[in-house]
Structures are given as structure tokens and as C-alpha cells.
Length: 532
Image (cartoon, rainbow, N blue to C red; front, side, top):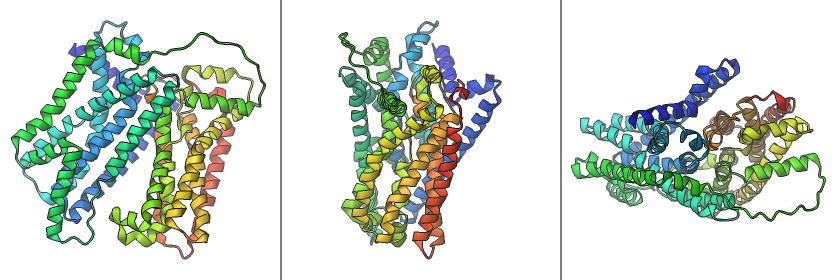
């Protein structure tokens, strides 16, 4: 069975990263797209390394270096839990690829384990990206012994097991609950978003407050944080104790996740087919009646089609909507706490005068994290031919997709801007830009998302996670959105212009011009030119 697992895992990983297609295709455009995607991955990795390294340096600078390893381990586990939770249900319990694999001369256990291996490898790569730069900074300051390297290496290797198990169980429960209800997708979306918000809000409260602390207070704070992190995530405390020389906690750190994961896989393998069938079952009443037929405007009809496509997938809704929800939560926190209190909470009181000037960009960041348009073409999948044969212009189809994304984002944008204005209380000259900057950046990201999806369409997929979370278009558009927000924000801090109002107008004009060029290029594309 081991050979079967390795073969299936190899095929799935190659398919996941697009390697298999690039190795065998003769299409130069696909190879160029893969090269561009690789560059995007490298940029994202470099950004992550910079952030984690800076975080570890900040803790050492504040005198809290002792908690860096366990803090990184906790944050990593939370992030893996959230990321795995989004895709566990669609990858692990997908029936589309299972129907094909089950006809092959492989065991059902091999199919199940290979899916876990695929998710484990992707999470392990993520673990290395997060832990290595943070631990490298810690090693530079702390100069630990050889045991630190051995324990940390084993901790990283076993780190994905527990989040992967928990996310799979939660994903199965949510799928099981929602599959028995009429509005299956909406219920699954509500439960998923609710759980993710709870996890992220809880993790946000983990930040330490270090203002006006002397060395004795810092020592006391380290003990408090250690205890708090241990209560939030016990394996983090086991990791900390193992680094202090506790063999018992080292055994717990590796043994408990491995035992729980093995037990879960064993139980799941016994009823894998029945569970997949039950979780993917649909129920419908055969009492259809033909009602009145109505003719509507082409754009309105296509808009309604986009709405149905969007709400047909809970993964699509949650992945694209979580950024908008975070924008409201962020603006709500500022409205309740005020900018001053938020700056102190985030350990940045020295930047308080500048924070007011970049708040519009801060609000725009979560709004630009993900757009529905970045995978709207790919989500058509094998039904894309239906769009190709419709007697409508490609421009109308693209406009409908853009308008739907704007309709989804608009309520969250308005609520978050109003809350931000309440909390920040900006001058009248700046208040206008609290509306305009997030709006133009949001419009840019929506248009950029569709442009990226037209550049990197993926219509032949086995599960939705391949296009919603792992698609090239999603990654490139997210990277493009982040850069569009960060660059003007950093320039605002570095240049400190004499008139921020003029600077804001320049930024808005530049973003609008780029958006217009992208939109013009989209509307000139013929739908039929998009290949599988």
C-alpha cells in the first residue's frame, strides 16, 4: 500500500502545483504562465520571510525573546488550522476524483492517506516558510545549543498533524450539518465564516502590551504570556518545555499529534466511502412546476447567473468574503478602541501621527485580500462551453462578473468606512479620502482579479480548492492587490508630503488609470479565445 500512497501523492502534488501539466504541455503560454506564477510565489515567500523575521526581531528587541519559538509555533498552528479548514472538506471528502481513483487497482485506504499526504506536504512547506526565518532570528540572538535544532526540527515536522486533524473533523461536521438542510451552501458558509472569525479574533488578542515595563515587569510578562499561549494551544507549551530540557514534554509534543492523527485516519478509513457519499449527498423534491417565463435585460440575466454560481460553493464564498468581514472587524475595533488605543495595543505608539495618514490604506488591505472575480471564470469549469455558445457579447459576461463582485463588496466597504470615520475622526479634508482610497483600490482589485483569471484560466479541475485557493489567478491578483496598497502607504510614511490631500489625489488618479487600462484590455478580449 505504501507504493500506492506514494504514487497517488506524487500525482496529486504535481497536479496541485501545475508541474505535471507544464512538463507535458507543448503550449508556450502555459509554460510562461507557470514561470510567472513561480515568480509570484517567490515574492509571496519573501514577503512572509520579511514579516516573520521582523516579528521575531521585535520580540527580542522588547526583551521577550524567550517566547519567540512557542509564539511562532502557536501562530503557525492557528494559520494552518484556518487554511486547512478552508480546503479540508473539498479536498479530503471530494467525490469527483474519488470516483475515478476507486476504479483503479488501489485500496481505499491508499486514496485517503494520499489525500492527507498532499495536504500535509503543503502545510509542511508553509511551516518551513514561517518557522525558519523566525527561528533564524532567534538563533542569532539566543545562541541555543544543539538540542534546540533537533527539537525544533521535529516540532516543525509534526506541527501540521494536529491542525490537519482538527480542521478535517470540523470540516466534516460542517459538511454533515449543512448537507441535511435546504440551503446547504449558505449554512455551510455561515458556519465556516463564523468559526474562522472566532479563531482569528481570538488569535488577535494574543498580542502583548509592553508599554512602561521595566526588566522585572518584562520577566513577569514572559511568564504570563507563556501561560496564556499554553492555555490557548497546549502543544506550544510542550514545545517551550521541551526546549527547556523536559523529555516528557518532548514526547507529548510529538506523540499526541501523531497518535490523534493516526487514530483519526484509521477510523476514517473504515467508513471512508460511506462518509464521502453522505457528506456529498443532495436532497431534492420532485415537484417542479413551470412558472411564468420572463425576459430580462442581458446584463441582469448574467448578473443573476453570477449570483447562483457564487452561492453554489461555500468555499468560494468564504474564501472571497473573509477579507470583507475582516475589514468590518478592523474598522469596528478602531471605532470602539480609537486609533490611539489601537496603536498602543499593536505596540506602535511612536507611529501614531503617521497612522492617521495611512488609515485609508490600512482599511483597503483586507478589502483587497481576495476578489470573487479572481476565480469567477475558472469556477465555470466544464460548463464554460455554455457561455461560449450564448448569443451575448463577451463584454457583457465580463461586466456581469465585475458587477457581482462589486455588489458583494459594497455593503462591507460602506460599513467599514463609516466605522473607520467614527473611530478615526479625521479632518474634513481627509474624510473624503477615507471613502475614495479604499474605493479605488477595491475597484482596481476587482478588475485585476478578472484580468488575472483571463490570463490564468483553469477550467479542468477536480475540486474547488484548486481554483479558489490554489489557482495562479488568485495568487497573482492577491499579490497585485497587496502591492498596490503597500507601495503608496510606505511612500506616504517615507516622503511625508507637505499636503497629504494632494498626495491622496495623485494616488487615486494613478490607481484609476491603471484600473481603466486593465478594464479596457478585458473588454477587448473574446470569450472564445480562453482555452482549457
